[in-house]
Length: 291
Ligand SMILES: [Zn+2]
Image 1: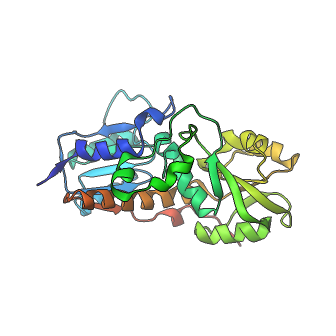
Image 2: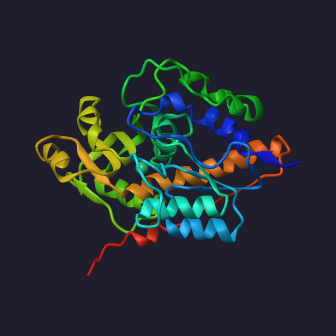
Image 3: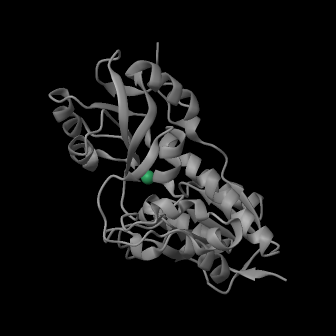
């Protein structure tokens, strides 16, 4: 029996409740029909032309993207603009797009949690206090018995950024080299004394420039994120906290692979005939000339 887009949306809303999204964000079913049949779902950070081509070749019915395929108001859909031709292509090939952005950043098991896990941070807490209940997915509790999260179930999850401690203090440079391998990046930009020992680490997947000051106030020795603008970096020069940026893509892509495994797990248990694939890794297209 085929399943419908709306059934996949229900799973996604359990994992990343839409009400967690920032007010400026644009999440949900942005292209397509809730009633459309789904045999294959593709997970991706972005809906680029290559991603659409792959989706067409692999007969994908639904794309779940992290970054919304539509952000600003548009008044025409034609092939004179990039967004217009993207939408035309998707509609022409009957491909729906569902986006879960800042709601997936904040959610349990979302981009910020997965990054913190890869960074080896323990006793992880949200960087900012939040009045929201812990949005642990009901499906996780039901099927995967992720009850181990009970110690985290205090009010407070559902905000951007994470903070915690490394099991032992390490020299900044040594730690960054390790993380560079884990996040599969060739370079890392950083500010701070390479020999300085760090233990309290704050993190935010993607563009975390807004949280530099919060990380400092929370007592972090190091703040790790994807990218920070020059003027947001300047205060770091005068303070004690170190900063490291590994690239927007590298800090978010691991969560896409994790989400794919999680959705496949859920649907296997539910005995749905739906395949989940991820877009081809295009991280190597963000290049840096090094010689
Ligand atoms: Zn992002």
